[in-house]
Amino acid sequence: MAPRRRRRKRSAPVASPGALTPTVSGPSIDALGFLSLESNVPGLSQVILQKLNMKSYEEYKAVVNGGTPGSGFGIRSLSDMFQRLEDTFQFCARCRVLPDQLPDCQLLRRCKRCRNVYYCGPECQKADWPAHKKVCGELRLVAIDRLLEWLMVTGDLSLPSGPWPWPPEAVQDWDTWFSMWGTQLDTMLESVLGSHAMSTLWDSVGRPRPDPDSLRGSLRRLLSDTLSQPLTLGLGLRTLVGSTGKPGGITVHVVGASHVEAFLTSHRAYDELRHMFPGYAGLHIVMVGVDLAVESLPQLSSVLPSASGTIQLSSYQGLYHDFWEEQIETGRAVWPDLVAGFHPGFHASQDLMAGWLPTLLLLRDYEIPTIFTVYSQQELTASLQILRKLETGIIAYGDNPFTSLKPEQAYTNPNKQPVYCSAYYIMFRGTAHHLDGEEAVGKTNHRM
Ligand SMILES: [Zn+2]
Ligand SMILES: [Zn+2]
Image 1 (cartoon, helix red, strand yellow):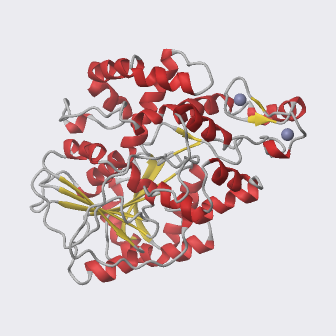
Image 2 (tube, protein in one colour):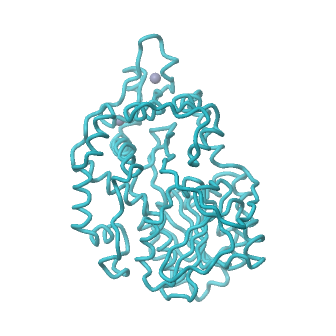
Image 3 (cartoon, rainbow, N blue to C red):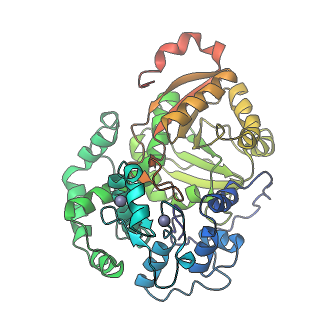
């Protein structure tokens, strides 16, 4: 229940006979992320573990991966759970003091506008306002989204279902996607607003229920967040693979997938891809990552061709270049039609770049059509620079029309401008000099 880790109902582990023993090596990015909390707000990682009744990061991770905590959650009620979640956000946004470091009887006070950040007192709040006012409005949305996400966990907010009512080529971005579902979606959202689950939620969270428009907006953002990754894969398939059905179906590899991605992966969300490409004979999506929960998806075993018109999801725990050597080069798994990476982060540090380099070179040299996404313009610029240095043939980059619309707060640094998952994309294939005739395809959507 820590921030930006979303719990999903545990799906039953799928036993796959002859499942391959995964190769695991390299740094665990999630562990690094968790421990880096400490450098910003000393003591906070301990607060999270304590509030969740867990003893170590390993136990926390086991739970996020869908396991049962050794010590038991010990959560007594829905309000208890929401209170514990809120407690993990309690530190002074200005001086970083934690509640138990305050003198007796002094409490942190919450910003009344966003109900998201806390202060040890009026001095810190006043001093912080010039910085906080730039993000207070967006953080208000974040605080609502965080609570309404619970409705996705309980299944009270679900995705529109069935074939697309519009021809797929008419749906190029969120505006057209929402228009396509039109009244059907409005009716669905109204019923969520009037649901028992919604009332119970606001009875349990210790803050007033926002107005209906704020709630509708939040539900839409959550839908976009759930569907952003599948539809971004669709954008990659449209641009780099095309809409012709290939016998045996299409294979997509998601590289550097974390357990968060695997958790968010639901067949329902990926069904949207089936409707986006009704001509495909089948889609097989393989998540490959060091940090991938073994239990959250069926492991890639001896892959059978996808049955016509179906989506198949599977996982492989390990580094992509090891996966390639073990699975692709031996012919055990089929060559990918598209490779996608959500927030690979190779621009961020030497260590991450060292981990990614063999994969980037492999994708380039085998001329695999590839789409990566990043959070910000700054990351886009830095990532493009690296890919150009590696002489990859960049085909297109720019604003992702299927970005998540849900703002993400920098947890330990709440006044940092919120970012949006997969806000920008980069597509490349092969090396730069192979592209002379193809230049015209891309760069239609960049704003640099
Ligand atoms: Zn303070
Ligand atoms: Zn505020």
